[in-house]
Length: 443
Image (cartoon, rainbow, N blue to C red; front, side, top):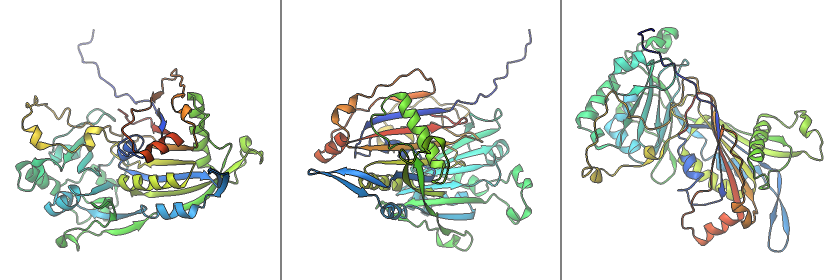
C-alpha cells in the first residue's frame, strides 16, 4: 500500500435550477426582491411582455396596448455607469472615498480582467471589497484570505475586505496595513502575456473598472475622486444601448402551469424565445394562429446597481400585467450572489458583550459568500409575473421533487401587509428562477 497521501482533486458542481413560487408582495424584504438585491454584479437585463394584454375592469375587460416607450424610459434611468482603464484599487480605501461612498449609499464596482484567470475584484454595494487572486499575487500582496474552491489546488485565493468594520477606519492599525499593501499591488505573471503598452510605466497594477454608485437618496449619482487624483485617474461616463425587438412565443404564460414539469418547460421556452428573433422559422411556432409576438427590451454590457434594479422592477411590474424579467450576472464576477450575513450591517456595540470566538487559522471561515469559478458558466435570475389569479390558486401549487437538479422552495411566510399590499398579493402571482452554471456555488 502506498504511503503517499491521496490527492483530493477538485470537483465541478452540477448546474442547478432553483424555483420559488408565491403571491406578489410589495414588501422588498421578501422574495423575490431580497434575492435580486443579493446579485450585485448584474450586467444585462431583458424584459419581455406581450404587445397587447387584457386588463379587466369592474365593467368589462379592456384590451391595452403595452407601449414599450414607458419601459425604455424606466430602463434609461439605470443604464449609466462609469469606466476607468487605469484605476488604483487602493483609492477605494482612501479616507474620503471610503467615508463618502463605501459607508454611504451603495457603491458597486467590478474589474474587467485582460485575460481569463487574471486577478479580479468587486465591491458588492454593501461596503465590502472581494478579490480573487492567483497564487503569485496572493503571496506577494500579503493580505490574509483562503484558497478558492475552484481551479487547481491552492492556485487561486479569495480575499475579503469589509470597510464597515471599526478596525477599517482611518488611523486604525489594520486599516493602515491593508491600505499600504493595496497601494503597492504587485504585477503578476499575466503581464508578460499582454502588449507592453498595457503596463508600461506602471510599477504597480492598474485596473480596468466599471463603477456604479447610488447615493443616500436612492438616486444614481456620479462617483467623484478626490481632487489630487483627478489628473491621474481617468473616469468617463458610459451608457449602454437599449435594444428593442420582437420575439416569437408559443403561448402566453398562465398560472395554470403549476407543476414542476410545466414550470421547467416555461423557463426553457422563454429562454429560447429570448435568444430568437421574429424572423426565425421555428417548427413549434410556425402556425400563425398559435404564435404570438412579445416585445423585448434589453440593456447589456454595463454594470447595474441592484438597488436601482429593484426600484425599476417595481415600476415595471405595476405597468405590465404580464411580464418576464431576466437578470444576467457578469461573467467576470468573483461572486455569484451574497448571503444574508454579507448584507447585514453589524451592531458593533452588541458585539463587545459577546464571547470571543475561537480564532480560525489559515484564513478558514473568512469568506461566507458563494464564489464563482475562474471559468464559471452562466448565472442568472428570472422573474415571471402573472396577473388576475384567483386566491384559491395561491396554495395549490403541486410539485414533484424527483429531479435532483431542482430545489423547490415553498411559499415563504408572509409578513404583515397593508391593505394595498394584500390586494396585490391576492391578485398577482410570480415564479422566480435562479440558474447557477456548471462552475459556481449556490448555498
